[in-house]
Amino acid sequence: MLICELLKPENICLSLISNKRTDAILEVANTLQSHVHVGNFRGFYDEILVRERTESTCLGNDVAFPHARTDHVKGMVLAVGRSSQGVFFENAKSTVRLIFVIGTPRRMATEYLSVVGGLARLLRDESFRQQLYLVDTPENFIDLISQTERKL
Image 1: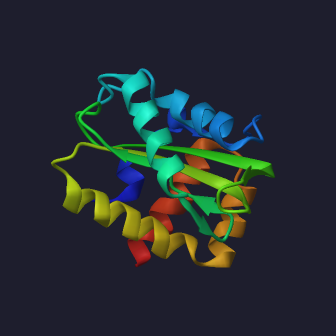
Image 2: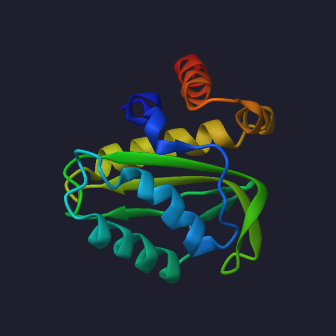
Image 3: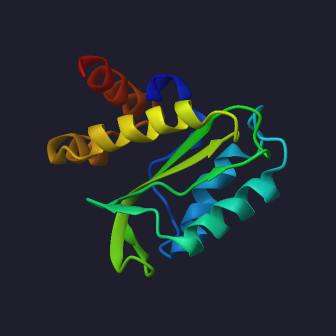
């Protein structure tokens, strides 16, 4: 499963307003409220927070993957938020600039691992992250991920 196929311009926020962890996660997740695969948004978001409280989803390199494997989504969903000032993830004592909110039905464990692994591979490259910080539209964000992902 390609990451670029999950991304939609309406689910990418390139200028997050929130600088607090849970507020920023909600700001990104909110872009998925009307997504066809999200059956119960509140339940989905609550499960993201439960997961985040259990263990930080901050991966280092200014990146976090708040996520939930839940029956509140019918298909995999992905939303992205970018913060120029950074969002402090106090449970990891780290600042994050890219937040990827992921929702996956429980039955799609293999696909989930494929997407998370693919994102981790892409985002460990500092020059790639720097390019993501500079793109000016959600469409260009998706194009950059698509071009880079297809090279791997």
